[in-house]
Image (cartoon, rainbow, N blue to C red; front, side, top):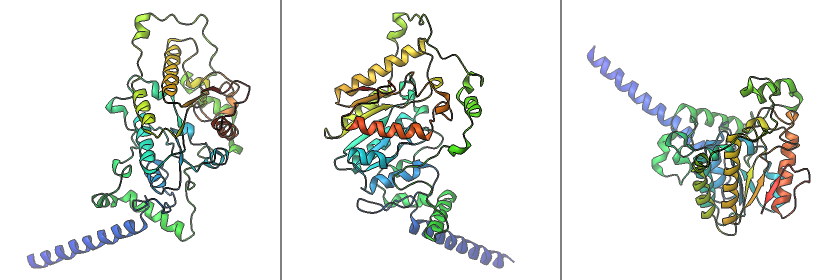
Length: 352
């Protein structure tokens, strides 16, 4: 009995090892995250819904010399529109809910793998102005970018591929190669992630836009008079993540044309104009403009009351605008990037 048990255990362990080897070979051969991709090699089709895991291979492929970095508020910028308007090969590397630290890592990866980046468009959300933005607990989201994907991949990294998630993505890639499915995100990082325009419902959108106000349309008019701020309070305002931003921009070659964009969220996403929180945000924007001047970057500020941000019908929720606004956003940034002017409705304030 004991001998039979030992023999069965050996067969079981052997089968497990062989099975694991076959699964690892399957994942490694398909290489769904492009760990073998280097300059001159085409990246794998993007089959994972989480951009964080798929974008590093786009950078390492060397196909792009210009990039968009930021959060989901920048994801609807179409690289094809920017590429045509600015004579560059753009990739959109913006990630849902990306923290300032994660954005810096993506910008670093882009800088290190592109010999002379032509352009960088960086979306600066209000998270950059938070006093605790650099705290260790705030550096990563629950969906962090694995460090080994954001650097050169070595042999020691390959065993990390053997897990159920990677097996699933490899399976999706196989179905793509067999013609049974389409890539989830376009090969330049662009995806329309908002619902179909035909399904838009203004009442439903307003319930999301004003969710922090109990769902009812809130009074967003400027406070009059503005809140009084004691000098001691304003002296304590600090924005530690901006030092990361400045260090990152300074590390790019002087030839790289950098544009810092404060994207057009709905007014409900910002503190009420005139409030103490709004005045603090205005100070932060002034600091962003100052660091941009120090490094020859352009600032395009949409983060204020305008015909875009004050119209509920332009948004799905407080942060995400509709495709018509996205089209204007991309075309206008391309125009500004080549030295032109913004539209005269005041939606974009350009600081060169």
